[in-house]
Image 1 (cartoon, rainbow, N blue to C red):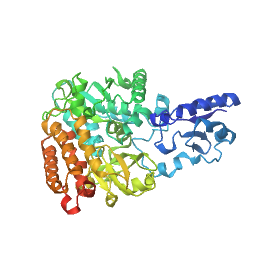
Image 2 (cartoon, rainbow, N blue to C red; image 1 turned 60 degrees about the horizontal axis):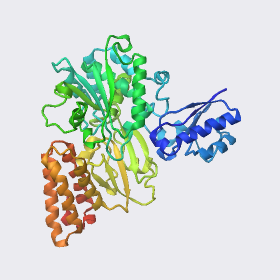
Image 3 (cartoon, one colour; image 1 turned 180 degrees about the vertical axis):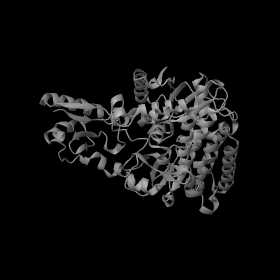
Image 4 (tube, rainbow, N blue to C red; image 1 turned 120 degrees about the vertical axis):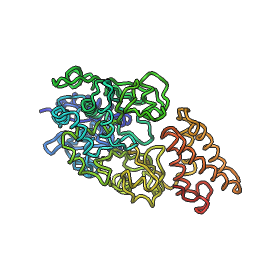
Length: 521
């Protein structure tokens, strides 16, 4: 009888030897005459255990990790194919505390299925959302997404249903749907993991969105630094056409929708929706002034839905389980779940999907196990390179849009980067301005000039005389205010967030006392 073994094909797992483990296991099985069936699945998100090998047994899937190619022979000798105990055995995968405590909705199939098996996808609940949607009127689909409370997971947190309703009600008969998969924030990798581990979920979500708003053509804009995700997604699109999940007659319901994968050129600014649209049109990615908004004049001047990967990939679950069931998760105006990405100096980095309302302490210390160095946590940056740095005394903040905003922080795309007490926060403040200067599209003066000037002023604070420091801090605060109020987009408008948080919480690293640093909002 054949034994099924799962080894991730996720980029993170491959980077630490998953391919070598797979080859070693196949070779050893052939040598021993063992009958195994290997599935290259996505990652379960426990990145400190990669490469993670799972074996299908009567008890369920048993996890072993991290496994190297050199470990394979000994694991087989010890009865790995029977789920036998071993120092690298962690027991039943689904019972591991890291996974058991999560509420996986968007990531429910990632790491569980063969990413490119339509049969596996359907067997694990795939297409249920699309079939439900196609049994409803488009307006009812929009209403369901609105009632679910689903908000954009790309960073802005704008209600998804309202955006869809605007496009659906636009008078122009030609409408487009664009998925922004240009995941460029440091410490974020959820889009990549979903594209590599469950691409059909995104495709299904995009078909539902297209049906709801009346679009017949869509694009997924993927960053060029994700070659594995691009290859997997493109193959998934080909399969979806073969299965009639895409094309002239989706599922035989008379609804047409075509989907194309486009690859960006590595510009961070193309994560901004209007710069992405310019890039899709074959232009240099430059931020557009608003209004008009993309929902009314987007791609090629037509009404366009622009959503993030996680937003669209959540839609099938909303339609399959019902708006009310999804809305029951979360707190306040932050409904459903968020996919948090733990990175930086953390013992157990990876993916944590949980209902909104989880505390930052539980995420960093509970799931993350504290710092990898064992030293105290000093700072946590939430929301990517434009997010605020929160000190250790803010770890009891809850991870939802409103509570973080009230404390001068933002949730962003859910990236959480941890730093121990050896970090130089003055240099982190400088990095924020330097990053903006490097990645700005250059269209607006506050961002283009402000970021360069910001680096100069922070250098003056760090290396100048104490007598000049106070005046330079005032200049820096004025510059932050100007960039926030005057920039065309979030690139320049949010760059002051990490700088202000350093001034507020870590002024000593800029040579300031708490009194002179102040507490800018």
